[in-house]
Image (cartoon, rainbow, N blue to C red; front, side, top):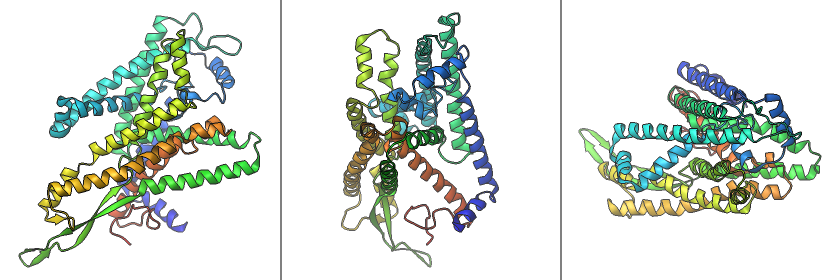
Length: 446
């Protein structure tokens, strides 16, 4: 414990790190502030009455609300959170896999290509946020309190309310996207992931309070806590699990110095894609209910909404398959065995028993494919676990943290942010947070 407190104090001794942490905290505070600013035209008091009548309803809207930290249920200006940006990123990455123009931008465009892709992503974000903002305005105009009083007064409802809501939500989404980029550039950690992370954390405390004060059997609650701890430990182990491939470097004599002749390792992570497959799959799973919001009177659309409820087995099955697909997809675009093989060959390295070149590439690719399968299945099982926990009478709010997307994102983002802080501390010769245990945050220090 003393070592942890020392490391915590050391964070604020480094001026650059201190500034990055404070900037990140400021941005996240602004994000949470925007999640409580109600859209113009919505009666906040009547909205509170409606929310009280809907407690424990869960559903996919409840899951969406979890990702945006309650902003959706609050009818806030940040109702959509960062999800339109995530959706646009998914679409661009999918286009990069099938459309030659986007393939060229991703592989050969360099810095200019990256700027082009970012520009297209922003355009896509504006389009998706505008479309979803209009859907939100339609939904808000259809909500009433238990007494039948609309939360948007009749004199306010209409085309002007829809346009104003649509434009304000789209602008707020772009602001949040900019804030995420600023956190990544000037703060600590990945800004987009941290925005989702802080929204989830904001819902954890009230969800825990609801679960443990509802009068359930104390033995059952203890079993739930123990199970949650074990699942969290499993998520950490898989997130940090690696398959090390030995690489031997031949000796080279340059002048009077001898280089090489050592064995190093390529650490292939069991979960190379991190939390991105979960975020990608979740963003796409919001689409069916977003579409049904446009057709409140259609029986087919409402039946589609029932099939894709957060607690339905259809939702769980489709969600699991999408996670497995996106795990392989994101791994393929984030780790290129050909590049690794070429770099090893240039540096005089080789895998013992494997010929350099295409044989090395195929060997690495085969290992990566094999270890990605159990990693993707594990992610899928953890992600759909809340669906089954609700069947075991765990409260809908708390079940979302019992495994599931929330836990994966919390663990993944927390570890990534801690490792970035760790690297800043180690560069200044301070002890980091991860100097003991099996978390591989320290490099080259015992």
